[in-house]
Image 1 (cartoon, rainbow, N blue to C red):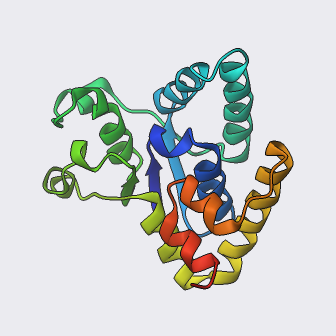
Image 2: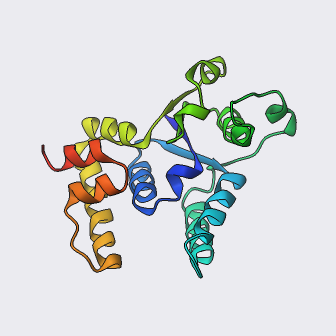
Image 3: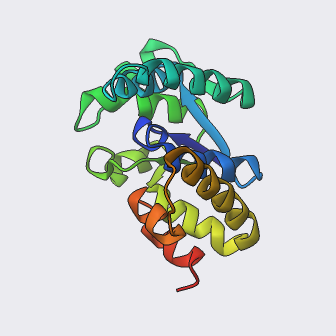
Length: 181
């Protein structure tokens, strides 16, 4: 399964690490475009000094880990498309050009299912995606979550209950599943 990852699911660190860690288990093939990665870097600049530089370093690592994930397309593809927010056309174009099955996004309103369906696509939010993958491979997803959790605690210097960390990362269904509730 090939999934186009929108900027809004790459920029929050825990969400990105959960998605890419799960992709590394073979659960799906991630896709993105140079513009999506650039949007991530520009969004990280808002964190303050060093935010953009850190993001660019992380982007270099992501590109190295998935050298075939970056999609390009002819401008004519984007020109024929329509979405409620024209600023998201590049995401849809990347998904089509990459033959993605779904777009992983938190931005449901700007990716109407009927328009995506016309292109043979669907969308899914990261929490539903990861929860579904957990149902198929609970040990694999739990191992990824455990690594992400330990790194979050190391970097923050705080103790994080798993469920609370996942909820903060906008992954509450996954957090509930991982907590065994």
